[in-house]
Image (tube, rainbow, N blue to C red):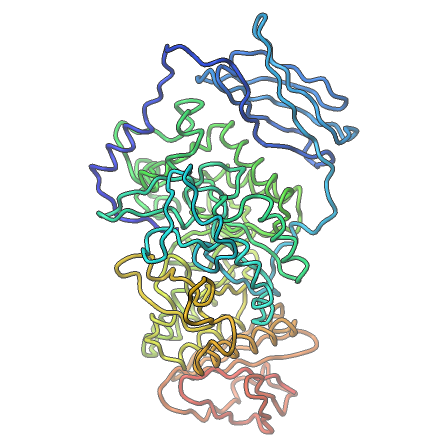
Length: 631
């Protein structure tokens, strides 16, 4: 997620009036009660036997608590500034059985109680992870398909509107709509679905640059334990994950730890002043990553970058508060266990506290060793990018994040498609970027992409040049890493972020009632769109079935005269990718590739099924990437 421009005056007013001032007034209090407990349930048999319950309700923090259940011990109670919160530290022994116990509170003669359930863990697939053998498809739920029109809008929500004619409001897409098209993803060759956040965003419309906008994007959470009911709610999401697994599709959930929505229930009644980062006046993050890696940087710049708010509508959580950190970490574990998701994409990763992120990552990996975690660190060089994943550089702080989104390779591939070849220009940038892979402990865990929900669409960026389109997608699906495709790229959806992000988040044609075209079917696509779809499908299917291509070693050769060649290989197969980025056909002599060509005499073009009976010279058409299985 990237920042948006906002009025500073409005920012100061909203943030200071709505959030920064806590008010624990002396007014008459409502009758004491426990209105919620987070996590909403837990499980026996977890590897970590510690659990912290957030107990909330009017005056709930003024009570003393007890629990009487075999194998469950209340170790400590934490009180905070607000009288409405108590935090209970429990241990759950390995011998504890599934069932319900009562949380009992007492204050003099006054008593409170609340039932709490410990469930048995299921054997359903969960936390399978994604690897370089996968192909991820990124979906913006509100804009993909409307499977249940009854949940489009609710009068009791802060934003009760839905209008497909307004690009800034909700359109009604939902989880059921995505589930309805699982066969489409399978046909395309996709193996994993990454949904932009599905958690409740019960946010009011916000004025951004004079335009009222909804939080349809999902990045402003208002209740960590509720899937937004406009997307279908918790049970629909759980069934969607099960249905995806049944089709052999994994599910990646989009996590946001750095901030929440201004309308989050615990922001409207904050447990303590240090629940969020506070400044004398509203302070926005600088969005400058350099202070985080700069050995000569200032603490002041670091503080603004890390602790400043993303926007006035998204309060910045203080993860140095151990209660905040525990709340977020437990929610991550609860989500994996409850819904069965397979991997995490972490929004705004570099804005989070370093130690918190390591603690959260490790807690997930301890419970789910196969889970994959990859964060968003929007940087412009390899050294900076390596800072946010497991690396080989002597940074003062060592990240334990398994992967990250590869923004540097994204920039390099786009430059390669839009620049003339040169010493440091054009496809040389792709070569130079991959040549620095030694900074990563495992570059295969990086998630690669050509665009996403925050960017100009790929097809528009390359000037709607279909040859370039195929060339870039060939790189994406044949180089190292875990490829990710933004919804609609396979049918040539286009646009720039002008005048807004909504232009690159348009509805998928055919996903909504009344659509004149249905691009989910071959009959609904035009000839060029079908050619694009079938190109992605063929290459993705070949990749899925060819371990050498998705998990083998990578060897690349220095580009010459706009020609770039690399090989993916293992002990049983070798695939050669030969790219001509120029405007003229090339007869490419192959002597200098003998290191990998030695022993091979023929090849098969896997995109055209044509055979090459002589590899001494290979004819490479202009603006083309050949994928050759060597024989």
